[in-house]
Picture (cartoon, rainbow, N blue to C red):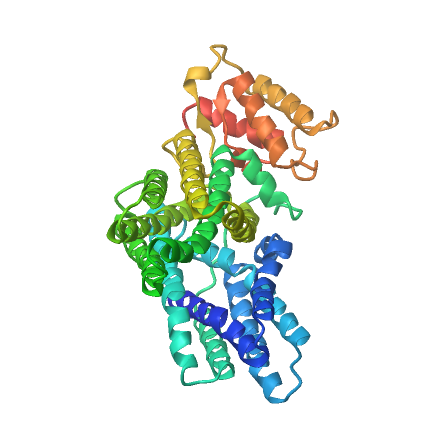
Length: 483
């Protein structure tokens, strides 16, 4: 799976250069080349949440195989139709949009498959995620460079055929990966495109961490725009300096992936991610000073290296914390929301640089990074030392001193169910999902259980115990010290 993911990522990064280059060679229009970039991102922005539905229905391995198997002929259509002299620009944009559609569920499926293959072991999942981060970062670092070298001797169409071959090879490798199914238990699969977003709103840690993820996506896009201008303004327009700044960020990300793998077994994912969040932000303040080039390069490399050290345990928390049946939609929701921050970062950076200059943008990058890291560290601190996997957790300091029988506890929980779902007809065996329960109702239930019974339940506990009777069992297990 890891080899297939790396090959697929390498092909995607080659396409990121080869497709616009193909347009420039055929039309000479930078505007049309920009439209090709936008067409690749547009499906994620508009249809991203559908990816969770697809992964939930068909499973991560099958989705990955189908996506790579479909992208191979789609990207090959460009040189084939061009050779047949029937490729118009509108048709090219349509092909690129289709390519983007098949890319939507791939990343979420990849992370979920890694979690399933490691059987939810936190250390193993973190190591798998660190390797995935490394392959993506290495592909982003080397893919365009290799494509650029190939374009000196081959036509863009031939490079696109090479891209198609990488997708085909990846699909063949993935087809050999053993199928592993996530246990669903008695929980019904969540319904609705917005289910993943609703779950994030109901989970304090994941909601705050998702906000940080969006902010990081915003600021790093702003930084990508600002770095070439930094070289131009402070170093007499030396293009070599611009290349060094970008290259140090890429090299730092690759080294950070190696670091994440090495330290995965030494620190809990929550603490590892929180520490990395601090390291992401602090070096970026060097950019607003008059630091010399070596300091700038070191700051960029250090900040970039911390990104995969955060991402690897973050994706581990994201997958192992959420009940299996909810993972596809929750993970796809995070990826989609994060993707929306990218275009906003590009647009905001360009607007501010045109009107206020470079320095305000660099200050804004450092401030947004600091705020995003503070939000993430706060979320990690509040999450507590034990990852939330849907089990009930006692909060003894808030527990009432009055002991209740099972019947009394069941009566309290039934009333909480009726209030949270606004349905007085519910019985002890009523199903939470059939009663149109969502993450906000689940969160209200957990608050009520804490208030009335002194037991702190995760939102996931409601999903894995989806009736008043089953939830009563979970609460009593906590009270008896058996959770």
